Image (cartoon, rainbow, N blue to C red; front, side, top):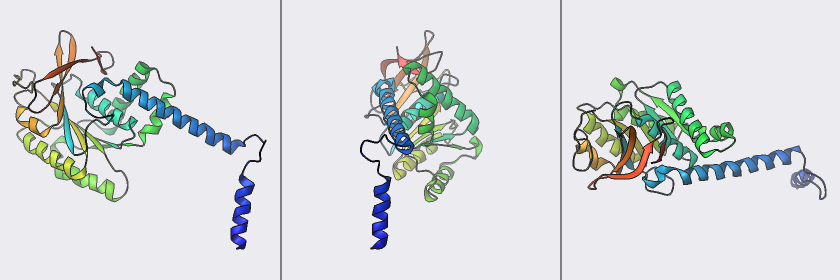
Length: 271
């Protein structure tokens, strides 16, 4: 009973008395809450204005858990930048994003994200860029593989290591640099199973050949057999000095929602 009374006395003593100005600790807590509200409003504003919302279903999520999305383009057109934008949308929506790279080291991936985020900050003119970036960065984890040593079982094993040790629990996975070879169909099928079994939203980049003919659905013929695995694909195609963003979905004709890549920033924008 004495311990309870002492605890009550301590808690009571910590309360600011009526009529007194709040102390430094209370002021700090107030500033933190104001900053969090400001960040929440900024995140919501960016997500609301994002052109990707016009082509990707859902309130803010880049895809439903357990499904695959793809970004398709020939080399050097902007696949990595679009993947980073999809990932940043997820981060701003407070989702845990795992970035898997088969081409670039961690440092280069970080630079991609920082550049894309800074372009977003300049485009939407939001303040406290550094502070906001630090708040979302805790939800990102980068994993790298050598392309020749990559396999879906290895990826699954490393994801399990992260979750079983309580290090990171991915909700969205973006993968860059999967080799387009004779094992591609097997790899995509395995990734589809991985996404379904782990309730993951998984996006990957697929490289199309420069001279690849188009199927009736708009998919490059070399990748058309994979289309049934994806709920949606974004195709980037140079045309008349622009990069046009089209949407491809299973059993549906190609759609062009008047989106392009800004050549200066590589951000998806309205044409």
